[in-house]
Length: 377
Image 1 (cartoon, rainbow, N blue to C red):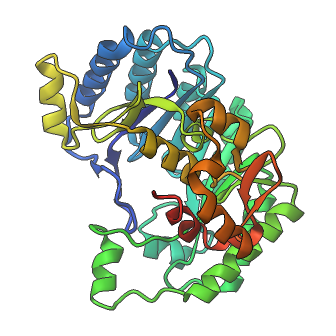
Image 2 (cartoon, rainbow, N blue to C red):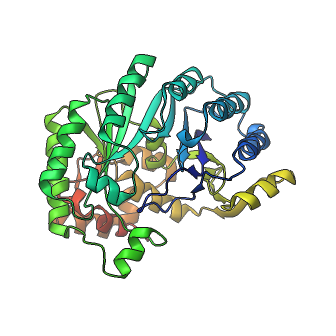
């Protein structure tokens, strides 16, 4: 049963140098037609999940706030028309600080959005310029002030470390700025240079100066210490919240639970089947206009794959993987499946087992990906 809905808005006014998501420049795109196609896709699925208890809706991108107030309004009305909202407790929209006018904030708030997730990344102009970001610190402060005035309480910002040319002093300064905002939630990621990005092309030409692994690890260490000191609970490798404010939507992914994905290039997981939608806008919209679900690929998960995902997604959470829940879901114990791996990782001090949960140790968080690899059968 799907617990969440993800809706992809693939438009950006500016393409960031590190981004490998499915996105296009906003200019000269059939934005209004795309919104109507999204509505049609949601309508096609509506009968499939009318009995599902949907808890979260997440507008991602691209940049949902690249849309005009009128376009946002239309999108939100279509969502309310086709998605059962009675159990939705968290409705998030991603946002760029320099695009969130008071009018757009009001449209989002009146349309039921109760959580904002803003891409801030850093608080130094030169670093923002290198990333291809277009906002300034003033945009961030002003937007948060306006959002609170309109009624938003649950506001998260994304931060990044391990950036080209970034120093430890700059990272500490970014964190100090972030804490001064007194927000409910932070996501903080190390830069991963993905293929097909501007940064990747620069790296291949040896024109990208990245901090070394040691400095990146130190930055992560400082991040964890400072978040704890300022009263934020680390509930996942890269996510920190004030009590009562973890992202419910993201926890659906880490709990390996099901969700529907709508829009060009969106992914979903329904009835044990993982699927991805057609990426190119034109082809996505053509499929919809033919009355077809715009699915490009499907994969029926085997029990083994589900078990692997349960571990490498669940171990991202600070709470770890519940042994009781694992047994109820798969009718076998974690020890039955992973006896050798658990023994090895326990000896290395990378995981701990308190009898109820298997979880990463603090040491294990630094090499999370290496730990997760151990659980691929």
